[in-house]
Picture 1 (cartoon, rainbow, N blue to C red):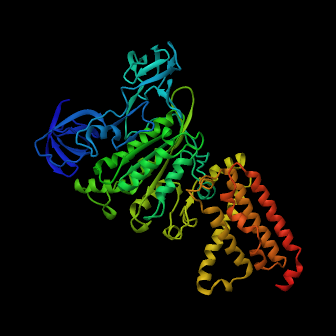
Picture 2 (picture 1 turned 180 degrees about the vertical axis):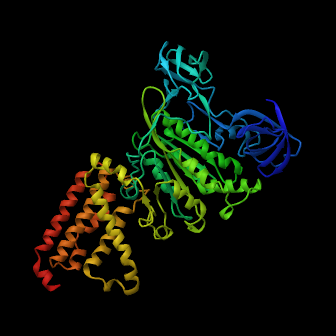
Length: 595
């Protein structure tokens, strides 16, 4: 590795080096005697501005800068699943073995277990024609994930000259020799890819398939599609982390990536402790067998925080190219934006609103644009998706601050967490009046075809009740509920029942933690039918007091806890019992007369 220049200026993680005329933008370099990892982010003449991904404490002018000739890249191959990485794709467990509790400078550890042996089953044979993205064979990475060995996207149409037989091989072994453009290439079970460059694909689809999370307020009211984008902003203590845990644990995806960029150490510790204990709902096996964690907490070098989201999304795209549905949650993009702001300030760039750099919006757009449901390159044909969900932590729960407002421009599902709901112990604290989903029209066909044709109608009716209740709040606050007619009082009662019996969901209850689409729609039918029958009874002369005293109401409110997702017949029975309760109420004219 040749010396390219020397350090002439240091300002925290920002370093200037001269003599870098041959350097390229975004080239990875090693700075100083300790060979700290850095990346060139600006070049002026022969002076390069470098953001160093490690602490520059003790670095002095005159120290050498070594060039690698390559952009910041990740290694993609078997061994990633179940690993906890830092923002540069260095496995933290291996770093701990080498340097103890704190990451020493210049630690260079391979991201993949090169020494491990993997059983490779070829799916191509000698003489086959292949192209970029084709599947060469399969490795059983974990009991939950078959790792498909892909031809790197940089390889054009080629012919297989030789491929190994089924057996155990290390990552450094050549598994296939191909001829492409007149050259012989040796392919291994892994390859590298620049983190800032989106991986190519063949075709992109409209977001027509919902990403089911088992969370009623999300799936029914504000759904997100596979390959979609979403944001979950909220103030301190509103439950962002728990909600993201629920989405990661229960979403119907094959692979989960959790990127902790700049979060507090105790929150990230909770993730690192909790995730290995979670069980995959489909198989009962540990969730970590299909999860990758990227941990870059707030006391780690700030520049590495900026790289961590790109590291995560590149690994997500790799598993997408295998034909898997991938969910990536980034917690939080606000801390990532703060890293951009700090680096921009140290580089003496002109600040924009609230000190953030003027390119904040374009960086957010670059990140969220990498979501999508696509047809992957190569053969056989396969469809995969990357769904990106970013947590936003606005100071003082102010949704008008720059990160939140710019994020709203590039996402289509907005789950707004409300501090008032959280403080009243309503979880998930997603405010149903300020949240929205741009995927409703796309995924309505899926719900109609696979679950219930009435989904859109039922959702609309329930949402109208909640909207009407919100409009009546001001009247109640000024004049009291007694000023309302009985029909409006009934709306308030129904809205309260919906909030308690449907929107609220306990992440810690064994039954209520996950609600299947079928359970959600049947539960919603019970509430909507109750509203119809209560309104009909009220207009038929039954008093509001009698309706409020129907003994079936507590059973309806507890159905989410008492009835499991596979016990749908009990929900049908509860719906029938509700109808019978109203019939019984209508046969008591003497009670109505007294009332």
